[in-house]
Image 1 (spheres, one colour):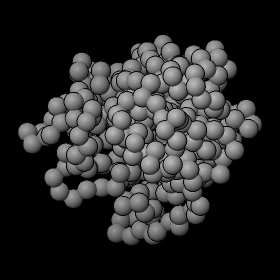
Image 2 (cartoon, one colour):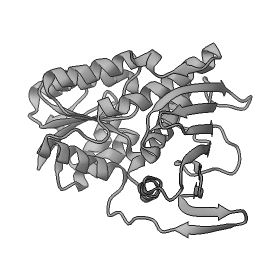
Image 3 (cartoon, helix red, strand yellow):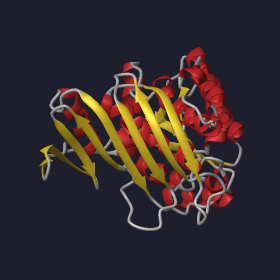
Image 4 (cartoon, helix red, strand yellow):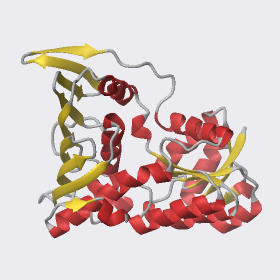
Length: 331
């Protein structure tokens, strides 16, 4: 059993706190949050002693012995939190997105390498039955040569807080999940993007909450993505709806079910892989496994950089109205 300091226990942090106490590999040893109300609520829920609750990260790192740190703070705080943990000899599991900027992301990854620490990014959408099954289907070659992929995402969440004030809330905070799923499903990285983002008149976000993106993958496949965080009607699942078109037919991922169609008017369901654990529970397992074996995690910071940089390439493409190669941001 390893001990972990959790930074950020409100909102999504509360979900993580529940997962940590249910884990067979991890136990929470301290909570850190600048919001005292969040801190008190988490401590009461999981019986964390007052002496192990902190509003100051450095004090927590100096006071409490731990094996690792779980960072569930907004992305703008990621560099400060993660690098402080590395400096204190801790490995880190951090929420997505990887950082507030590509420069910060690169700095965190390099700092982890310099300190010999493991750095894992929480791309939890991979760890579900549908994408796990879809990846295997695509890798098997049953679809034939891949051609194009269509992704439709429509939700209308009202989070409040920092997302409402972001310049590109959908792309930088949510679309990263879908870009990571693209890379996972296709076994390929993103080469270049073209994009148009907009903010409908009824939007409750300051920044653009819709995006239309054309994506080029390094295996030759192309993706057409339409996403919205201000939908006023019928919604897709958080995973989005997918159409993966190949030479032998199409794999459909709709409403969290999979089906295959090789002729118009017909489709048959694809049986989903059974998983005992999903989402954050799988990430906690992967984190422990990486520390046990010394292997690089599937969603390490270094391996996540392409998808993360692609979101910032989207922002640049929309702003400059041109095709942007991801390498422009990472080289």
